[in-house]
Length: 358
Image 1 (cartoon, rainbow, N blue to C red):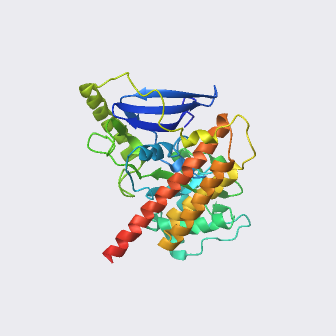
Image 2: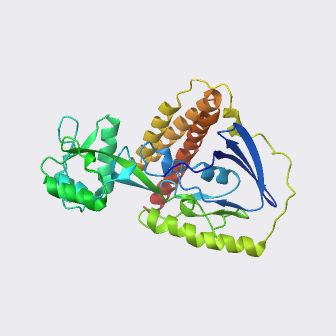
């Protein structure tokens, strides 16, 4: 999915009785723009784009969810995501089970050494019947990533004609196979957490602010995923939102002339770019978030990770500065730590619920 035909990124929201004031930053003109609206529709996707390996739109990095919460929205289920174990092109395209099964479950490293040693899981992959074991597969893959081991599907024993036929059937290029192996990585496919809404897609606690598509809270893992829920949500709730706005028709051009306080996000802007290592921090954040989701750590570990995130946030606020695309990358990283914090809060709530049930 290519970048939208718009260079403006949303960096701040403030809620007033008659509507919303938003600040946008134009990465091309290097200017800040203020817009007032009586109705706001958030159709910005989820936050899977915060992960290094994902097959989402580049803009799905969760900023809007955090900004909505800051003005009163409720977020729910933020630790509920769908991570797919088989992807190619650094996570940008998912490899289907019919192709993966031809490996007979043999996942090897660069030297050809078998990495996945659980025969039960290997056999399930060979039968294309591994879906109940995805959590175990992801934990194995995460350990490989932590140990900086590249993973490959071993196709050396697969019939070349059958392999080519499968690739043709599913629309993949045979060039993915190099030296009879396919390089794979897990990829973040879908985030089910988001903004809680009512039956009209209006954000709970926020009059005239709506959320649709993947920006909504879509339920538990397995209930909804991109084709089945987010797209349908955009169509169904889009119609409901349009009807409500048309029927209510409250439009007022009078609005506040200034913000209550300068937004924190503007403190990260500077025409003088510095050498803050954004990419390095982003990779560490992605690994931390992946670890949170894959390993379901105990409450004690969550408290420790919360402190680490707060420390990183303080470092960014004190050191990271830039303009243009660099400013956008800094903002994405900054909001990413807020997303990670929401994941931790959701995991802590689930842990508390489990303790009560026990």
